[in-house]
Length: 200
Image 1: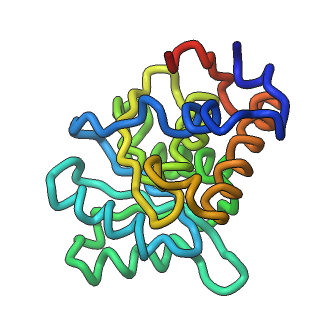
Image 2: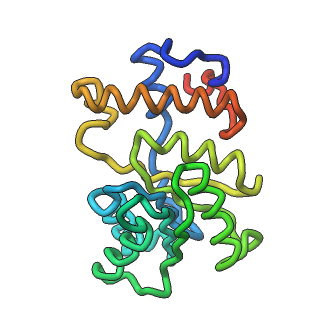
């Protein structure tokens, strides 16, 4: 069964868990760029994780993706945080237009093509919240060049982790919203459809 064949609001807890979390792990591979889609709280979880990955030598480039949220430009805030932690400014690429995951991916690809050249790239490392990783990956699969390969660094927050999300009201709501979104996007062609049998 494919993701697009499911109905929003009719997914069991077990299947929701599989859809969002199963099979996502870090392979420790080196990459052409660490790509970090933003959120309002990026500098609490995602940006520190990306900085750590940079200093581990996983890539010599960071891309922060995210636009204006009504108060500040998220990618600019992420860049400032990274520079304060010792990342060289010339190692950082930002795009300041996107306001959702689809735009994150499309604008990130444009920025990567402008700064590196997509033809010069083979693998990217996606660094985002664990529960957001599937959507981000499937969106890249929909819009990125077919030769791209992917590594994942799923960032753990406090209440939407694989080992605890169902214990918290906000974690449960976030997982339900994310799964419903994936189904909707798959039905409308905004992400690559996903064969759930591959999870087994």
